[in-house]
Length: 244
Image 1 (tube, rainbow, N blue to C red):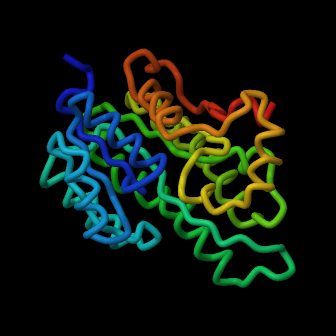
Image 2 (image 1 turned 90 degrees about the vertical axis):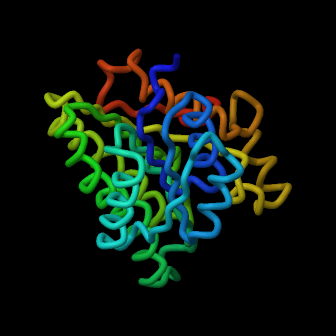
Image 3 (image 1 turned 30 degrees about the horizontal axis):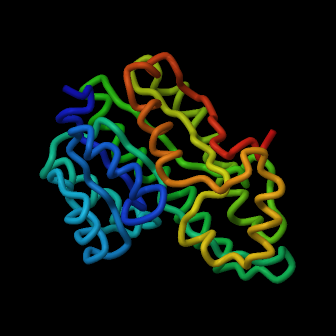
């Protein structure tokens, strides 16, 4: 029997891409999975497709009251959350001098503040059960920056400092917090890139390919496992060597 059997896992941004791959991984391993989407319809559809008893929940994670309600729904339905994967994220790209305040604020609210709200709400149960695994999905952009993505880079870099801080706060309570920093992964975000842009990216990746969701899900699963119980505050790039 998998060590994840009957563990409650919440994956934000779990309806597609990296989050979907993570939700599928834990569901296959026997966990009780809740995946969060921006609409109830997309979340419930994704959960039905994944099967294994997964449930879909809706929340705008940039709103603290919505996050608190979501955590209560998951806890009331499945039990106290043991593993939290903060994956939800958006992009609103633009050069610094042309970036609108709303584009900055919305990316920070979802990609950084949303993780704060989810962690704050979920750790209450983790502290009570003296067990928890938090995996925050950052990005290679948070490590090296990217022109035209000052808001996204700031949010993803902020996740790293945030995670290291909560790792120090929660470590004595058997709660680990780590960061996975994906490179360019085959998702809806990268699908919109032109052929020339994709070629330029591939030329910089030593592995010679874009990643897939399963590449990230496997690392997330490792960090949530007993094999990683002595790892906390770590940042693991999963990028084919891009950030070397």
